[in-house]
Length: 366
Image 1: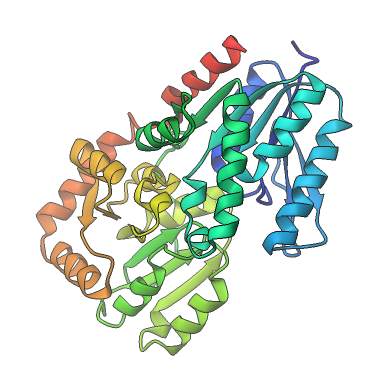
Image 2: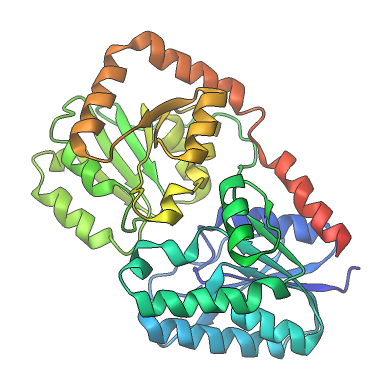
């Protein structure tokens, strides 16, 4: 199988997609020559080294309808004229159509990986016509894939009902890591966020809450559509000297900062279905850093907290609720230490080595 090729398609610029790095490594270890395909952004850093090949498609349009249309066309023709692939792997609906069309023409086996309820993202809820287009792309393509996977059990059930075909849940568990011993310089204990800075991540509410959390800094690692908006909001805040934006970080650097933090945050707007039924990577990255975290009281996070006790659930996404929850936890040292100890225990179980076996099962069947 050493000459068999596998092409994996996403629409990001590759460096921050840790789930796909892990999955591509598994496919590579199964004997395939893997190429992870993404897009080049104007501010993309150099690609990180991996055991698999990576290729960024250069785009004329960087956002909006024309970006998606251009990416579909460029991806289709890239897949059409490469060495014949044994496997084509689509990530989310925005790569499903070109992967499906190219696979039919080239006779490749296919896998679709749904990272979210794509048609329920906040941007599409405000645009019924665009949402209708993506819904129909899903209906046209999903049953044609040989296998479909997703990131949690809730999404597996919802997507299975929507498209009337089976989805295998493979959670975004990280590779197990030693607790970072890196010494970082900081004045105050800090609250930590890592991830994309997009709409509905609760960061506006967290920045507002910082005015009343005088004992803490807020440190944010990542970039996204809301990067400028959040920086402007922070600059207007009375707590502006305690709010720090770190931009994109290498995963090992993020782990160091998370390991030194006092609390992690994973705040989401539940009015969008893709967030309400999510199970974000950072949930488990925080556990690996032995960092208690504040999560929303949504189905998948409730399961994690009830089973492992690695943090608190927030019932409402507003600054008052954030402030009172954090202040109560700060006052209850015993409870906080319980969460720390729970993270130390849970990190042994919540690792990629168990989920990766499910990917191997799919590859072996293909």
